[in-house]
Image (cartoon, helix red, strand yellow):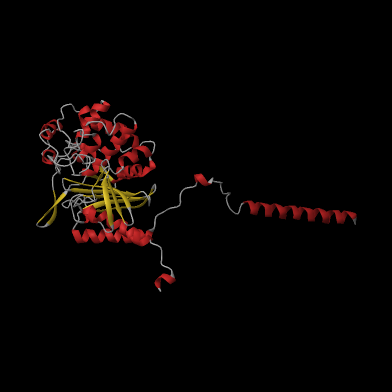
Length: 409
């Protein structure tokens, strides 16, 4: 009897042990263990809003159809995230190749923003001062400023406040004259307006910053651009020569408007003679890096101090009769170092546009919204002048708070 009880007890213990083992096995293998990730190392939540992107895509396509734009590439960043990126149309209206994110465009006067950031960085490093007389670096310069001390300073040439008439000798830049020739012609001029106070857009005079930087650093302007900005940022496909376009396969051709609509035109050498004013080439992939940096997310290359120097308002442009001063809700505008500062009722936009050789470029960001955009057009279609403000207007409307029931009553 004792043997039977012991045997029964042994069987009960065996089955109990097996049941516990099975339960423990199942409880441990229902799912793989989840690794702990500290909050600071977790990937950011995606900010892509597919509904907004659909509306923005429709806005772009409507403008392409309305204005017969041959092609463009668009990039939107919220903080460090790309929240919209798309390419439209062909590299050339007469070829089958489509634009992609690596297609090269000419940037035109968006190049001035690179010069502005470079000058700001050199000022931060005490290599130059914005208050330095330009003649300190270019002894052959003979322009007498129209101000109390008759001195033309670095900030004057970079903020288009030299006092010279608008586009003084820009024709020489168009004709591919070298900087020595341009300097000889500029020396013939006397400022018409108050230096440091009156705004008048320049290309030839702006280009004097190249000779300043060359004298201050002992490098060519493009070598300094590479050393201080392009190489540290990893903008590997950005270039500043005609060969930088003609030597590549994946490039756009600019377009001009003819009787049958936009037609492609040949790549030309002008503005590569004054790179700072309009001679940079870049694809959308590199413009993503540049936008990210100027928005403040590469402080290792472009510090907050350098950004503040470049984006400070040095001269008012509020009364200039230009398209950006007619944006809806416009309040005021100023010019920094190669950048415009535009305020509307809802936005504070750091901005610049460019046009050269049948290309049209727009770059902008609103530091309050932490929202930036790049448009690269291979034509001068009319959409280009309104593309930035249309984007921000759409964003503002889409993200405006819903009215409460009381507000509707």
